[in-house]
Amino acid sequence: MNALFGGARVELDQTLKPVTPFGGMAIFAEFLRQIGWTEMLTMHWPFAYRSPNAIPPQQTLTAFLFAVLAGARRFTHAGLIRADLALRAALGMERCGGDDAMRAMFARFGLGEIQRLFRPLWSWMLQRLPQVVGGCTLDVDSTVFRRCGQQEGARRGYNPARRGGRSHHPLLAVLAEHHFILHAWLRPGDTTANSGVVQFLREAFALAEEAAAPIVQLRADCGFYGQELLQWLEERGTAYLIVARQTGRLLRYLQGIKSWQPIGHGEEVGEFTAAVGNWKTKRRFIVLRRIAKSDQAQPMLLDTPGYIYRVVVTNRTEAAEQVWRDYDGRAEVEQRLRELKDDLHADGFALRSFYGSEAAFLSVLCLYNLLGEFQRVTLPGSKWKQPATLRSQIFICGAILGRRGRHPVLYFSLSWGGLEQRKPLLDALLHWPLPIPPFLQRRHQNDTQAVPT
Image (tube, rainbow, N blue to C red):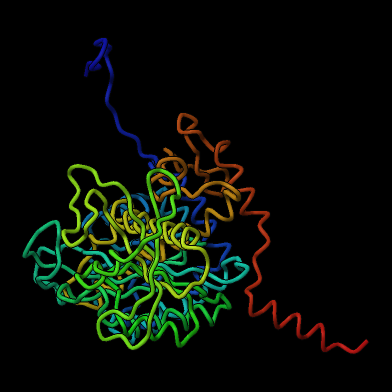
């Protein structure tokens, strides 16, 4: 053929050597080996195949995670790992199931299998997190997964991208300090944002307490604004920052604010205390107002036009400006949701079985959390990198599988940065002191104190 620019002659041929565009994933495979991923899956896997020729389901799940990491958007795309002999050699897989094997594996999951596998996995990952002095902040949010079939739980509900379309409506809780998905439910599409939120948070708080990662504050948007949640958090003694719905009665309270404190950038904060609706307890409301743009809707019940308002209900006692700035940090949970959907395509793996879809969804969340720890180990002190950034900068690297004596060798392409660019990551892994879980640290301290002098 002739080159597109310049017209130089280019010959096309083929090679018998296994070639992969994802040579950099060998580093992530080494990371999984270091943390004991295979042993953890084997210990808690909830079922077994009877056929002696079956591929171990732990390998099928791992192949699915690497396919998602490579950019698969659907189960059909996940079959690309099956043909990648070089990457399979780095993973130690003699055989690799395709998309049908992945679907069949997830289809075997029910509620019991999900609990027996993913609950221990989450406890294990939580125990590996660095401790936060003073406790953690939990951000709660929901999102919409569009569905175009007859999957269980896919129903008509809130769907801004496709009105009247079927969807699932997952609920997620994120530890803000770690970019860590603490807990998640896949729910039918016709549920509201706060449906079952108290039970959901009971499970999330229990997970955090088991791993000695106490939650001291919760942040949420107006979809979770309600008396039941506020009372439950107050009984626990947990601080909260939740956006209030701007009902007519709440807007009338806004009119009574006489003092507004400027905080810069044309924004002002005020506050009031009130028992709204049928509440029996007065609560503190903090209000932010800013000058509205010409295309922004403004409340019609207020006597001071030209402003837009945001209201947060809280049980914190600090200055209104500080509380509001702390709530602004909740914006990062929206970034976490975009990364899950745009980079790892968590909404793209659906089965007819509801629990099969939930198992695939939780697997993607597990991969997201593992990528977070991978960054803490290999890139300490650096800014958070999105999964797509890790894919383009580290995991995508042309490589050829060869041999040196009896040992397989994966040759990295220099034009993609080669091995030299990735050596610091490998060095960090190979010289990485495995972290001691907090509960083992406490046990060690107790044992030390108990030793007689």
